[in-house]
Length: 566
Image 1: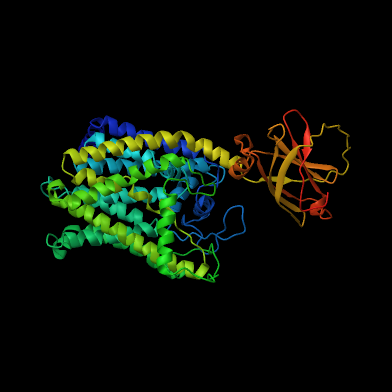
Image 2: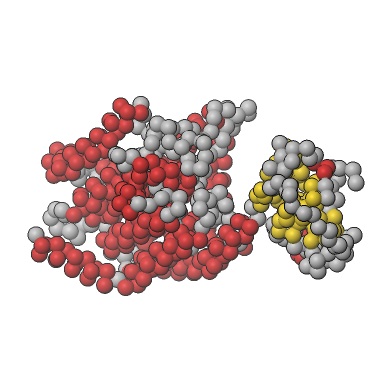
């Protein structure tokens, strides 16, 4: 037994030693995820606090399960609205138990575990590409293209069950690729084991992956209907089928009996508020396709940013679509198509599963929209597991020649351009977006403090606009812009006064393209402000609030509020 394990480990090391460039790119993408995990602010990645809350439930639970009955989101009174199976939360909950981790304080550790899941998933993609006879140069190019998709590394570096789903899906793809390899003589003992583990992960992690895998296996069976005999299939793989049925079936039966549903959740994110004038199904499909297309190049989160500038976005779409278009051309052109019919059937099944999953997504999304009136779930990250597998068919199936060489060259060039146009900008734009969020100010009682008089030089050329200013129950909210048009000087900070009493100050740095365009100067670009001040005296009225713009030379200029008499 030990000799067999030693032989397997040695073969594995030899496999990776023979692919140094692919290994380098694999580590490169993993480190990109580590950077995002280290620099993204807590709770801003999609649903991060609800995910962490379920992990917290699992740490506290004797069964290491989320609290699907009445679990709360940490720091809020709102009940958790996620309805995912528990494997991701249970696995991280066990880690939290063993090492006494606090999900909120030690969120970086849980993020790095997610990076590890994605890294392992990419390793299975590399093995899948090797199984399908791709060169390590092409495999490395596909990994580099993943690094050029901003949302890929962002999700990899966040607390999200999408990371574990990625591992399960790629393990399933690799298992099927081994089965589809005509070069293997005789039964392959490893392929069904890898496929089984991948399916267990998928079916206990997320519903979208479950739908895709069911459709993929169904399409795979139909494409190989004449080659697969059901009796022989069951006889060959009955132990794997038994393990899958007991584990997955046991969990879902237990959950159905315990919670009354297979995907339970303590609460709902949206209430029942049907739209007054709902879109028809065709309109919803147009909105779905348009939203997915627009959001493909950005980072969609609670701090959404667009790292790729407008002029480089066509290059991004070129990179994303070229291999897919190339596959469609090769698939229906006999001279360009490979003779490996098993690979053709495998990728046909993947294409059918992808289309089927989109249809299911649209149907369920539209039904939810008719109930709550919200166009939710229109995010490309739900299909993250298709990268870079989505690009594999062209490079595997297309025969060598001028067409394949041209598409590959354009794909590589566009990936390089997109990477350098986006990767260096991600952290900078994320920091800028964080700085542009409304500032929260906590006003404290000043009784007992001595007031002092200050003489300040005053400017009379300050222009601006208080676009919103509301004061309700001691909470002040304001938004607008300010600029000295005569001296062409941007204000550094905005002073907030309640009558003659100083409350606080906030920086003036929010990007305002409309202001710069209206004033005809880019020096007025970062001139916006937005803030929320809480616990102010309830006797204050909106017109008691005064705003002063502070400039670099120490002078201040009053900002006129057209909503109040001067």
